Image (tube, rainbow, N blue to C red; front, side, top):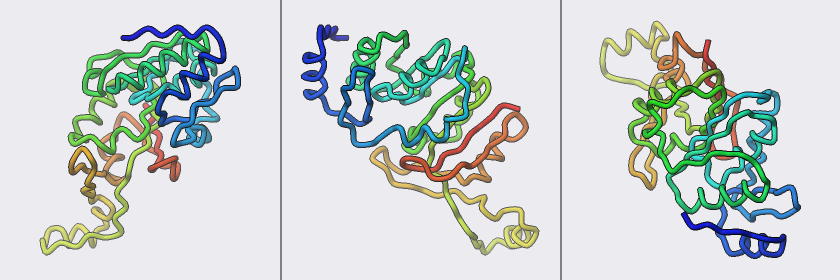
Length: 226
């Protein structure tokens, strides 16, 4: 990884201006990265969360906005993972500017299946581009210590009709309404968007799943260990 040392605010600004940014990040020295999205909009879902002395994992951390935020909120350990080397480089440099202790790793969610649990897991707009959604959700289960905040594209079927007699009987019993998932076409190829009810079934027994409304890009849910 290329090491960049920025000695003063002018050098920091010049470096920021030389980069392409996805996240808008406001630094304590007044500098701002000109990202496409204002990541602060997601903080309204996190505002009541006490991070004091908690461990936090940000899956798909990008340039580190939520890692920086979590550490400033008092988290004892913060880890960010991403598959984009350039974003991780940006995150490390911004963390150095803020003089914070945050760990960053070039890994996908599939690389952390055997990691120990984190108290709080953040996973924003990552699951929308993963083909093996069911396998990925199992990995997510393994790393959630207390609660996960997830932004995901949810399927919202009102009613699905099938010619199957068994299906029609189940519809009458109201067992399958909203159980249908949707296929979305992304740059990664076709992926599955699960419904909220489907997610509740997948996490049933160990976790509660709560819908909180529209997030920055998709739907925000919390997955909390019972």
